[in-house]
Length: 582
Image (tube, rainbow, N blue to C red; front, side, top):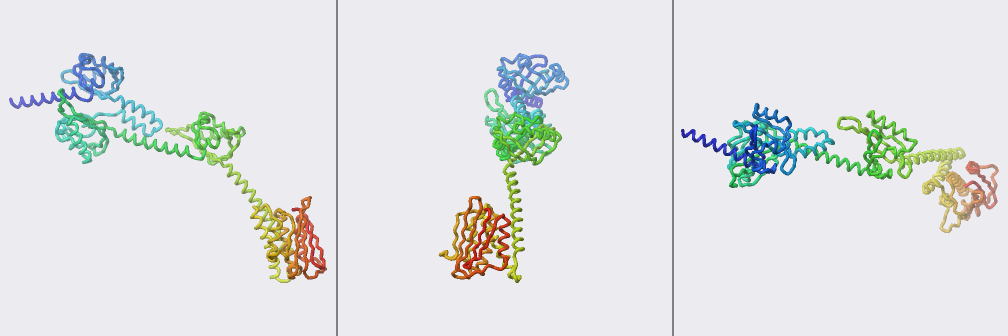
């Protein structure tokens, strides 16, 4: 008999705890007759819906809250009668007119009443809607978000003040893969949910102490399933108080947020990649634009603004033909046709038109843009201004042709020198040819200094007279205005002066210490250069009986330029007069 009384008292205490849980739980809990009115209305329901117990008790809950069911009410009632349990999503209207969405769980009790436990998921649903919008751009993770918010659940339990777990709901057991025997009647921090980390066990013990002291604990923590997998829970521990305010027991709850955390990480990483890509595109000196398959501009970076002169506001939404010259419009039709076929166009050189009407040469690469399903929806274009590059190519081509022309001219002159050079010995011939080529080399160094514009007459003469010049300038005197000769004329004058100086050093004025040379030149009105070479003070000179090789070389060199050379053999020295177009 005494044993029966003890069991009765235990059952009574258990029932009282259940009633207190219903009354004081943070979650909205109400009890209503299956065919009648509300009998119990806890503080969680009052907090969520705004109706006090005096307003709610005796009311039909579905009428009071204007409940919207996912199925017909009659079908829900039938399921409760047959299965004694129903769960699903409901929409309620609060006292202040707000609509809230709850994750509802209903249990038909033995006395014919329905225990309804609701959790407010309004904000979660709003977050799901907002993230669903973001997921349109990140379709790869959309399924994870949908799974997270459509399959959310609540873990719940009851603990005594010493931290022993006395009750655990079916979701926390079945979904996690544990039996009641594995978790009940032991310290909560020693239950297998936390078996993977001593640090987490310490946090659970801290949460227990904090809740036992009347404070709410909430934190995201890792937990472990029965199969060993680690997941993340939005964990909370609430103190449950009696009417006097004393903490009677503790109420741990949790929502699995593993998929949400993974999705948030993926979203942050994707957003970071998008920001990085956007920064690269925006700061690139190259033109980077995109357009749809109708040729309408959808993006326009700083490089495009700089090159074409249109701001992004002016360009976006406009047809790409705004920068295509009229005579190049066929190119755009051909490009769009190839893009629709999925082709990529690499380094296509073409002409485009700036806002101010000027034309620019560009190298264009066009790639198809696909949506998440792989369908081609537009094209991206990368363009680079190659105007200067083309100019450089043309300039190089001109320089190459000029170099070829000059090389041929040099070789022609060298060939003429070789053909006109003779000597009694091979060594003598070598010296003759070497001297004449050196004269050409000397004048070419002057061309380099002037960037091939030409060479000034006095500079040419100074190079050839260098061995005979003295500080007083007594042996060689030069008279004439500053005159720049174009390269072919400068080469001819260099060779002529070399021949005259060589001849004078062997037989004429420069072979005697008292001999002198006067080189005078003038520029005639008709563009002709008159050059006069006079030798004085040297050995007495006789006119040669036949023309020498030096004379023939001078005449041949000058005649090639349409000029003339005349030699006068005076007894006091040679006088040579040369005219040619400078």
